[in-house]
Image 1: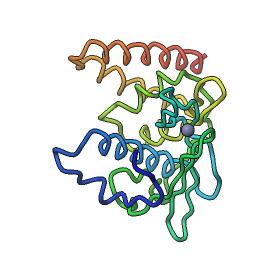
Image 2: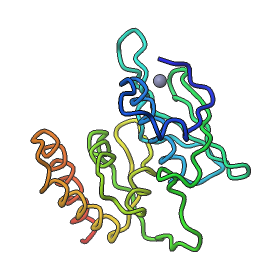
Image 3: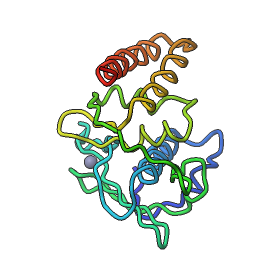
Image 4: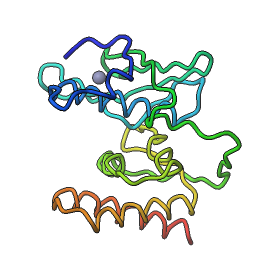
Length: 196
Ligand SMILES: [Zn+2]
């Protein structure tokens, strides 16, 4: 694994087709960090739902990625809460991974916490059709000791359930479809709870 200190996202976004898998994995990992850091509030470090990608001694690091975004100048710092992996990312502003909220965007005051498993939130991160508000919801997920907390109101959760259902319906890969179906079951039951 290359040592990561300062990564310029612009270089990672246009990797050539034949880039090695390690470079692609790193680009995916840093891309998810940018999404989480820009979906969350700036100014404070918080624990995202993103797992650490390191495998010290061939066993997976159990840590989660802590992100900190500052606004002036725009800057993202990240680090694993368990191992030493850390870095700074630049060049992310205005890319499709930048999930900062448009100005004057309405923020829901009725959001409640929905706790789901890491597998569910990983399935949500794999969705390809999400709009900005749902994508923010997915990447704002915070890591807990057990599982992950999503903050959503009824409308947002309903919208997210719709996206998961649509993508599960059209998924040709059976394993991925099962993952999406499990996520759909969990979110649908959380939605029914909320509607009570
Ligand atoms: Zn780690």
